[in-house]
Image (cartoon, rainbow, N blue to C red; front, side, top):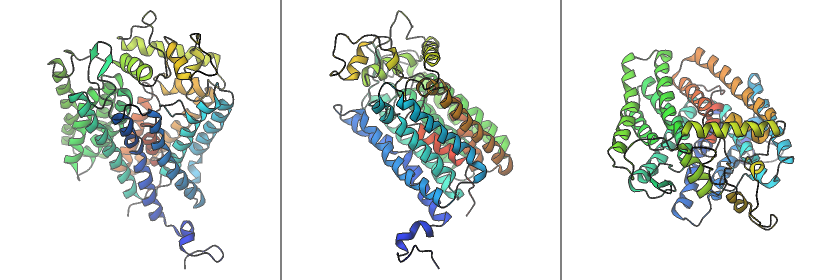
Length: 469
């Protein structure tokens, strides 16, 4: 007999009567949607130049609210394993300290909603927490596999748009990544070449590992790997090349852990060959107006993205940093951020407000009536992102938030290792390796509303106790 509250009907008590299988099915729908919503919403500003990229945050809100409801249901149904409360409590602590950071920030509104076009305020972090809780409450292996396939499908959607950008130069803000460099860099629907490379690193890891550990749909996974690797090289980013290398190493490791036939190591060529082909195409002068393959991280993440596209930073200062030297760009961003951390060690600058303490001029404009993006635009040499999530967390939300983040990732890593060691299933190996890829990519990338929903979903899946049908 179904449970009911007082004289209410069975339909109105669907939460009480929800089975683990039904919840897992709904959770897989919600988390799969999280892999796509920001990309789908990004289509609008890509096609209509006059619309702001702030609309993309609406995509995060849609999937975030759905998973917020699912997370509340999981708590009500007591689906969260009490043995795995530590990462949940650590995540909660990071959010609570984020509130402290928000209160002490330059702009409370920006801290909560995020900078226009970035959308990485405290609200976004709360949504990530909901993805994490919902994912760790999944109880069926079928649902986990469905979500992994959604990560791959999301990568294919980004790649389809990216190929149009690379070969036609259309639907992109990165056709010119400087005033005189026409590179047709790929950004997909991730809004930035670096962010696209981060997302495709997870998709490539998933497709490669599934191709070497499973017997079903291997052709699909191999073809997907070819596409991801090919597109990642056209981001002209350090993350793109590093992501391919990490994916190959993790996939090779997965072969030995899963005890799959060693002949399947040949599948890793589906990542190597397309990467080489893309370099050959560029060197042949067939893409844009460049004749040799180079990394353009500085130009794309600073000039083309934050300065020209969003006005979330000033232009780079050539007297202080060589924008064409990738190592020097990352070194400058890191060292400047460390100085900011020393000054704002406890609460940080406020979520999504790294650029604010760097401002040194208002250009004679009235600070109260002038839009902040106009003021920021005038401040040459400033930046709004440091491409190291660990430094970025400490700089914007304080060292206590960094400690909480490390505790979350460390506990998930330990639990994931134990889970893989015990089960050695292809699904568990895949989620574990995707998680490893994510925490490594965070050393040269930063959280964003396209990558982070997927990363925190994968992190949660690594903690779930999914059963076979």
